[in-house]
Length: 127
Image (cartoon, rainbow, N blue to C red):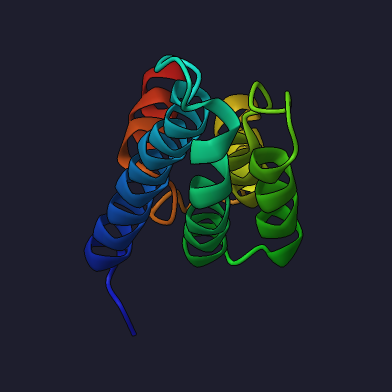
């Protein structure tokens, strides 16, 4: 049986992974949007970026629906403003975000070991 300490470490690393994926999602969306910064590149670059973006979204979030949407968003003209990778990140981690922001994780349980370290500290400060 894993100890509370190792459980906390794995949750902390998964929290770090969550924020790393957010950073990468922002980068993916900025690259897709950035094709308009270089005149003449625009939609031509998007045809090359569409499959790459779609692949990265699928691999990072295991969401086929968002990968298809990401491909369409990059391949179709004038849709680059949609932050598809960030939306995929939110949909993937919405339960974790809700638990952290509303502090509803394991209601009625005094065992905070499975919560990220920052949430554990906040709960201890409130007690």
